[in-house]
Amino acid sequence: NAKIRHQKVILQRANLRSNHIDLAVSITKLNQIEDDISLCQQINQLRGLEGNAAAVYFQGYRQLLNGEWQFKKRAYRPSPDPINAMLSFGYTLLTEVATSAVRAVGLDPYAGFLHDFVYNRPSLGLDLVEEFRPVIDGLILWLVNSNMINLKGFSTQVDAKQKRHCLMDDKVKKIFIKAYQDRMAKTHQHPVSKHKLSLGLCIIEQARQIRKRIESKQPGYSPLGFR
Image 1 (cartoon, rainbow, N blue to C red):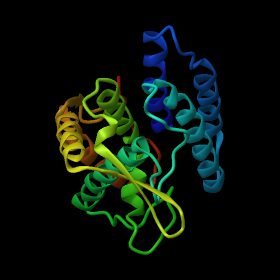
Image 2: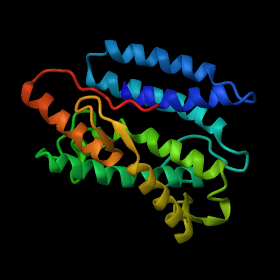
Image 3: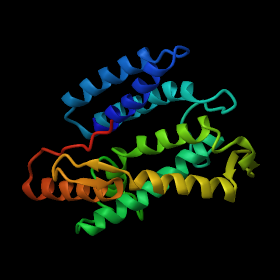
């Protein structure tokens, strides 16, 4: 539910600030899915609800982008457009941090819960990332809508299977990484430790929470909560 709540924050903020878009339908649907998740008791059902929430969220998200940025839906492997390319790049950076955090607290990053075991995939790292994906989404909105990044920094290649691969140039990557590092350095009050920590350190604290929940065999994970 933490991921959906953070997604709603992005849509709700935009809905309040703009007279030109109406995200009420998307927000209402996300509220309903959040309620359904709170009652969910099967992992496959949970995965289905999470997928539905992602589709609803990105339908709203696309309305927040300046008109020149063409984004229909979340797609990857390959990423067909600049927004998807940046989403995939940002999520990869975040996954590396989350996987390192899981290792740092003594857990196996390849044994996840929400994500099935797949050889050489850090499933638990990906589980931890879910709560923080909207950090990347918000960062991209800021970069493109403030013209920090423009379409000139992207190129498209078509592979042998006629699939479009959108690529970021080195200048775009440099700008993106600098903005990402600045965002990860911002502090938040952690819900459990009550200390103000950088976002990077908060991710380690969340990994520590996962370990405590596993060891105690009790629920009670507290999401970070973005404002």
